Image 1 (tube, rainbow, N blue to C red):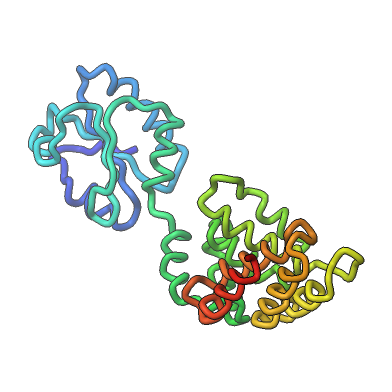
Image 2: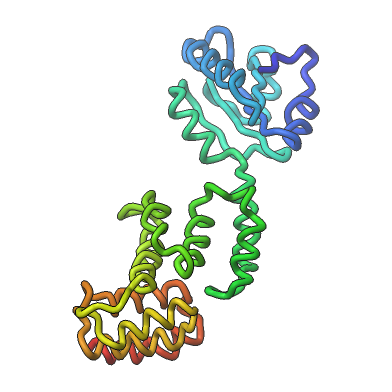
Length: 265
């Protein structure tokens, strides 16, 4: 925590410093009861982290700053990043609520790196896609979109690991549909010769293992025509998964989606 000496230099102690580390500014006053509740919580949290710094500003002594930032009620907390106020809240929140607020608004190097990289990724399932994903391993090891992107590559070599890898994705999760697509394709890749699988399904499994995506699509369409209900509707589910990973704009998706629709009818 920083309790500035006067005269308080907001430019140096908040704006300039926020280019090195996010700065949480607590606007408070001695007469404010909720301020006396919130202040110690923020101070304790600041002592326990090096991810952000705390600056407390007494609005009785810095009334010009309070007016400049339109502080109409206190306590009022603003988060400054790269010289700008990026988020704020009013009132004496609990420590848990403050942590959730910080998790939402603090800069996330992983998220920023991923957002910059994902538009550069080669189309799935090219191997150079994995190479580029590997460059973010030290930044994004826990980032959910990155985990799914890696899982979509791992399904060819380690399909047995994917149910565990993707266990964090539950119905209602924003990435649930993509995770389901990967898991259905892992079932296909793991398929062995058995009496309940048609020849077309075995052909689709072998083609998918070797990343022959068009052959996989063709075999799955044949399998749907033979028996769409086999293996808990795996032919349909796997093909839906393939289209999801390829994307709606992919040439194979555009070419074969009408054939898929005809096979279902």
